[in-house]
Length: 153
Image (cartoon, rainbow, N blue to C red):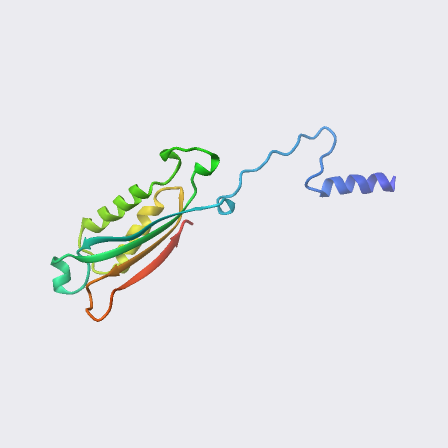
């Protein structure tokens, strides 16, 4: 009797064990955080931008270097060899350029936040890192700028 009780108790407390007549457990989908991410990037995109707090920066475009990195969940890892299975770096590049061209922004921080927010609108994008560099702000250095990372949830 004790042995039967021990066996029954072991089956009840063991998540892998099943009682007779009990259906096999169904595999659970992997949580998003546990799924591998693909890193998509755009490196050294240089675009004209009307950004800054000084009067000349509010009217005259200056060179802005953009680096973008996205952590994405895509279906290409499932063997799909189709552009619809992935987040397109061409689309990301065009979206960034369009955001920058929209209007004057005082702060690079504001612009970077906007870019991250728009990238995260695609449900497959889990993380977005944006690095913005003003290339002509100060003649004594190659660039000044910021980098931010934002995540879904």
